[in-house]
Image 1 (cartoon, rainbow, N blue to C red):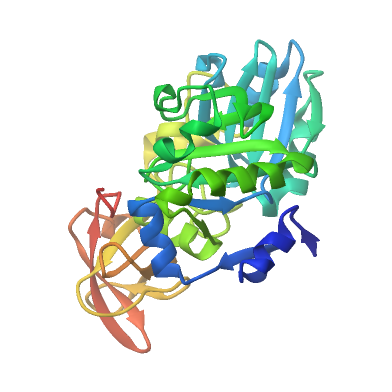
Image 2 (cartoon, rainbow, N blue to C red; image 1 turned 45 degrees about the vertical axis):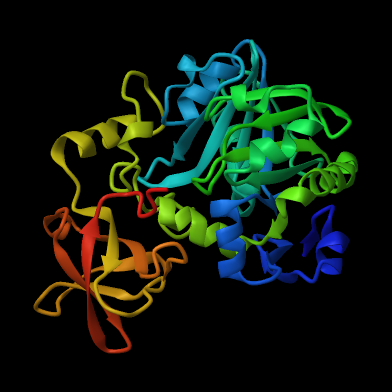
Length: 360
């Protein structure tokens, strides 16, 4: 089991450490609901240093990225970030990722921790373009400073005007006394904030400065459990739950990151899906009665016939009701439709709703 650079600090803060994607990770400190509310209303810090980072460079770097990812990376200016996915050649998804354009011919790909080796092998296998690839995953740490007070709490640590970085843009500059830090206005919570990329040997200094600067804002460390409830309230997909090697971006409602203005892995088959329709769709639902939907619970119709499965579910700390996502047969996937979640042999009614669950 790998340990992230700040493992000892998390243990000293009383974090419950659990194995996740091959790493020991802090799942919670003071409790999921409290940590969730801190990010929604204040500012909190996630250590997500288990994520993978690949550098793609050279004059054909963009050609490789265009081929392996579904979104149109040719639109990226230097300082832009883009959410995308890597389709496989069987109709599923290798991984979802963020593509950063760092320089003219330099891109940073940020991938899920559980998929680092798989993604690395996949991209290398597809690199007939002569792009240069470097796996930086073991050398970089990543802190996500999230919440509506993040800008105010962190502004004293940098000469960059944090409020001037739009969503899905980034700047490279000084932060917490360290030069050349990536400050990215991305996140997985829907409550604003930044992701900070720095070298492993720098992250302890950054962590300490972040907590000193955030003290007057009651900044707290936040674990992966609250990260999960926060992202689910926004309807953000989690790889391994809502998307995987068997689900297509069209089925997952990720048509908006699937651009057919270029050729990419399996693009012909996915275009066919888009034009002809799919047999199953990822939907969001809210429970109409008490109950908590959990992953793999059955979704059934009014006659009790199985129409799908829950892929992610929780009791929403913000909405105080059961929410979830799951794939169901397309004919049942109409907005406003009532479906049922089978919870301990009871069919609990739920309504299909538009995302996000949490409106802010």
